[in-house]
Each structure stands twice: as structure tokens, then as C-alpha cells.
Image 1 (cartoon, rainbow, N blue to C red):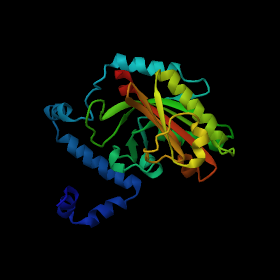
Image 2 (image 1 turned 90 degrees about the vertical axis):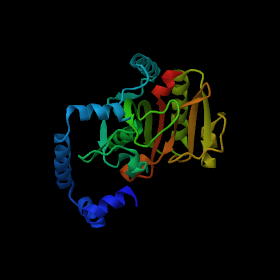
Image 3 (image 1 turned 60 degrees about the vertical axis):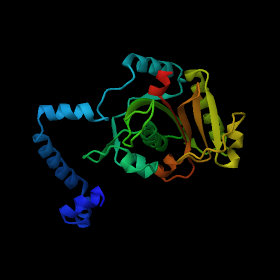
Image 4 (image 1 turned 120 degrees about the horizontal axis):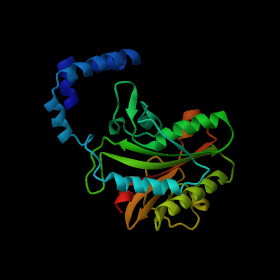
Length: 275
């Protein structure tokens, strides 16, 4: 018997979960706040310290702060002036990853106030890009540095429960002949080379039309990466993967406009810094 099945049986069956899920947002928040307050009231100082010692989500970064900051400064210094750098909130609307990017909701930390802890700054930047695109006709270029949390269990060197991502998004309208895609893909690759030094970019073409976007970059036809559309890529330095990116349909889904285009890319700052 699974954990959820066992708990639901003790609470009266699947109907208990259905009733909670059907509550209006404010009502559910009130119930969860009362529950968390009751659980917190039962904790002592040693209980909190015990969790701090054992919980991978709350441990400090393994990478020294000065090393992380130097890597962030290097990335920011290489950013073209056409990009606006945002200070993103540490939380995003519930479903930012699962409803738009189709990430499993169990892979993010959901909160009891109808939000989720930031798991990827490109998702939050896509929300802001959609708002700005609806306010004007110009292309939107945004960047952010954000500490994020991933709930899935990673293993191996250079894999952390929380880490810093440097993210770029470029949003605009389809101009025909893949003109938007060619321009902004070239901009992202140029930035990554300027910021990260001697890197190797490997491209996966998911749609044959995007061969003209790839240009002379090496193709890696074996990769079929997640939610990307048309073309995606990975960035390596000294044989270590430090970043990736590609075209996604997030602003189309957010605005309901199929003419919208969005390119995202990101660098894992912790991993880049350790190199």
C-alpha cells in the first residue's frame, strides 16, 4: 500500500482528498495555515535544529559564496545592454511550471498560499515577458539570477537540492522565415560564449526547418529534450554540462496567441563556478 493510499484510508478515503481539492483557494489556504500553525506549535528548538541538520532543502550551498558571486558577476558583465535584468520573487503562481512547462508538480515545492517556490527563473521570466508583449509590439529581452529549489532527488557531484540559475528569455512575434528564431538564437549563443569562455554548444534540431537556425553549430540528433520545440541545445565547458536552452511555446499558451515566440536559455551558476 502506498503512503498516500494509507493516509487517505485513515482520513476516510479518496473523498477526503476530493473535498479538500474542491475548496475555494482562500478556504483551502485557511485550513492549511491552521494546520501548519498547529504543527509548528508542537515543535521545540531542538526539533528545528534536528531538521536543519538532516533536510537537504535547508542546508547552505556547498559552493563558497565568493565563488558563486564571482561567477554571477562574470555572467552579468557579459550581458548585452538590450536585456533587462529583473529581481524575481522567490515564489511564483501555483502551476507556473506544471501548467505551462508541463513539469511534474511534485518536482517543485508548493506552498500553502497558492504559490510555489521558484524552480526555474525562465518560467517566471516567461510570465513577465507575456505581460510586456501584450503591452507593446517590441521584442522583449529579460534576464535574471535566482536561487531555485528542485524537489526531485538528484545524485552525483554538482547536483544540489537548491542552486543558482542565470536565465535569459527573448520573446516576440513570428516574423516569417524563422527570422525571429535566427536573430535571437544567435544573440543567446554569442552571450554564452562571451560569458562562459571556451564552451561547446551542441544542438538538437527537432524540426527540419530549424536547420537554418542551427547554422554551423554541431548537431546532436540523439538528444530529445523535454518541452522544447523546433530546436534545443546544451552548453558544455571542459566536458561538463553547464547550461541549456531552446524554443518553447510558453508565451503562446499564456496569451492564447500562436504567433508568439519564446527562446529561453540558462546557466547553472554553481556548476559553472566550480569549474
